[in-house]
Image 1 (cartoon, helix red, strand yellow):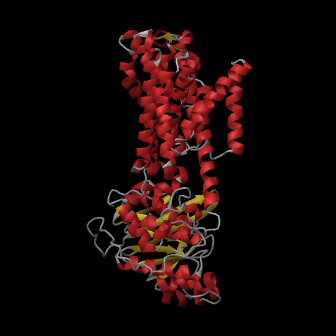
Image 2 (cartoon, rainbow, N blue to C red):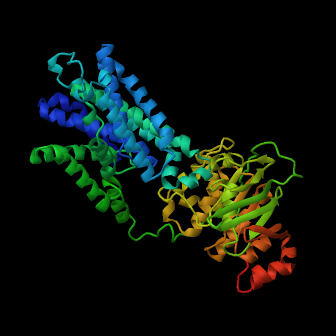
Image 3 (cartoon, rainbow, N blue to C red):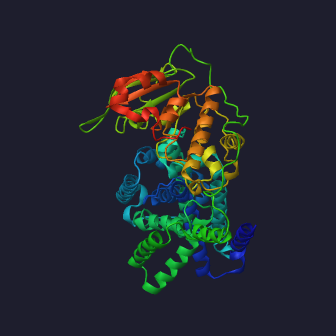
Length: 587
């Protein structure tokens, strides 16, 4: 309630500001703050939501500015009429450049977008017939009565800012927004839960660029002049990025707060130091301060401080008990994804998989089958290639040779998200949840065209695994074992036919091991097939229908648990006393 009142008060103040303040200098500060705020909200889509920051944000801003200037000069009419074209032009740039740039991550993405900025600046400087070259382009003079002063610019920018905020808030609650947040947290994990990371990043890049194009178009008309050096500048990109970081990346109103504060600092800094290189010094110096001392931004830091004060004397999520329910006892409905294939054919068939890292062959001619409806254990000593085999099956790693069939379909070459859509789910040896998202958001995040992805389904799954009481907790505040349950619920959102579990019993207490065993059995009875890597021999031998033994990257033996226990080669060479469970509590 307090936040809504503060936002409403700020909006009202901005709405009446030009009506009560006639000083041109003060109006200029507010208009430039609105320009920076609208641009920062746009940048927040790719930076705050998707975690892809760059120094190339000035390009779509400048493309929008030049589009308005060129069309106003050659086609006439009010520059405001050309704003939709400016948005389309900036979106077209983002679609073209984003198709290449989003394939890079981290520093590579930053470098690619910075190179694009420098190239566009060079082209704009040299293409004098269109852009005016270094001399720039003037725009038409004001076409309204001087009594209105800068009102059209102020209210156009205010409307753009309001629209950008509404879009940002709406995006946060859509499948696209959840996908971008998942990419920010763990891009490789996001791909394994059905999120097409390349497509999501391109769409986010285009949306951000279109808003920046509108922003640049309005600014160009207000400034009355555009030139390539100032428009396509690293300083502008740095200001947009810094506004997001200063206020709080990924928050709704943080970029707006950061923009207004930064514009005030920039204005008074220029007044004090005389402009010129002072702007570069202010932007660069403030960015260093923010990164070192305020990494989450102003709003998240304030919220964390208030949350810590309210939480004093209360138990943390880690210290709370799981719901005391029978494992898998909920009325969970496992939905059929497609017509049931011929059960006589294996659900998963792996043939001749190979993967080398330099001179080390991690997987060397691995071949095996997993029948429909089975719980198949995959065991072997450390370094035998179990997790690498999972990575090859799941698509997070490419095989040097060999083939993988799922439900009779060869899935070689398919990206991880497409394999997830085909019914393949997996968890990881070291649990990988989206720490800054809530438990409910973690479970809602997966995308499959065959699943009814909704909050209701997520609530059902949280009930099933006994975590409903933690739905609104940040996932990073849960214990390691609790996060394993979140990851299992996350995979179930895909309605998979086959689930790869990588050490589900590793690093957790015996009671939680029992719960996970009960969940696996309950899901298997509902028709889900499991392939499980596990070092807890009593757990895997009691749970599995069949056991595969991996050694030196290939399948050494396969059979029932009893047959594996009697196999002298397996027992002597790889399992020893572990096979009989000596020193290991049974689940």
